[in-house]
Image (cartoon, rainbow, N blue to C red; front, side, top):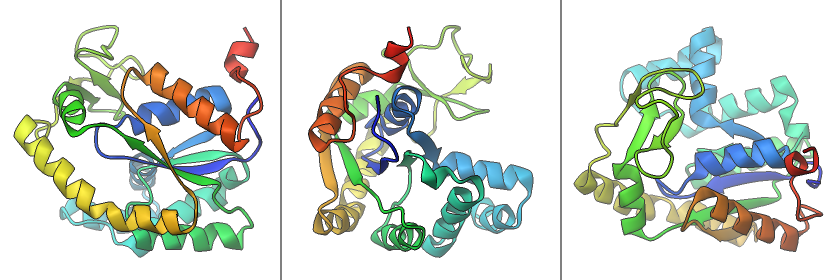
Length: 235
């Protein structure tokens, strides 16, 4: 079974498969998947005070300030008590300042991070993945025209929303995004490296292959105690 109360941040460039991997950790290990984008959309849709503050930045095409991002995530963890379970943060933190803010929140609650996992893949592999990506316009679920097709063409399996291709998922644009991301992520990786929390995970291959690699890493770290998922044991 999964070790109790493992708390990690999942990092990686666009196309690394972080969202899909985090979903598997949620389903099979019981580590709650917390996506920054989904949390923002939830707060905005509910019209909360935090959601209205986030919306002002999003509506104007501006980045949400680090302090506000940390405040939203802290509220989510505190309001739901999810910090007292294992969790995987996906899409947050994005900067060293956000990472420091997250650490301050978790330290106050006596719930420090166990690790930061950086999923790696060669740039051309990421380009191929992103160029074939489909995104649900309603719930944000990701699919791929070759490796992760929906059951019905153009329709999301989860909510039946329409699947679309993002405008910035063109090869030339993707390469630019990846170069920028590689530069911007360096301070964040350095932050977690200095804290001895950073672990790198080879993201090449099918998502199940990457998941198996992650399980091997987690067993070495003592985060999981057996080779079998809880879902597999219940069959």
